[in-house]
Image (spheres, rainbow, N blue to C red):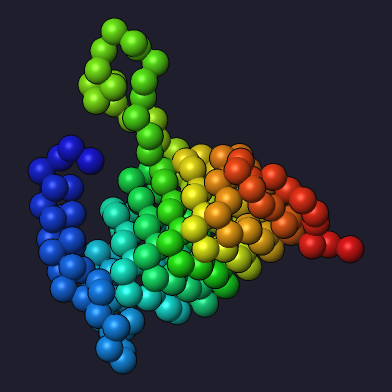
Length: 173
């Protein structure tokens, strides 16, 4: 993150993306998609709503037929993989990095980061306002309830809700 190349690339991306981020006119979805594709060839989402923010998009992969609704924030610093046919509702936050804080004798800002990727497999529905923390894998076919905080892996075909997110049932008979 702290190289001149990353600063320049990220600054250029944020400047261009800021021009179209909040536009709600017809076909603006295609403008957002086009700017993202300039910086990240692995983003194939069908729909990117206004207000979506993707930090470090070159570390993000999004499969076909997936959608990102308004206000979604994806921190791609540690890497994010989103499968095909994934529905991400409004104001979801996907976080891949946290501050290290183990040494109480040093300022937290001087201790670096703990980074881990997030993987969301195919055919997942993530409800509004969900927070997904670093290092989590959400299995194929899962449904994550609105407002949940996902801190651990969720097995495939699960329905999970809560803070912290817990599996409440399976979608498989």
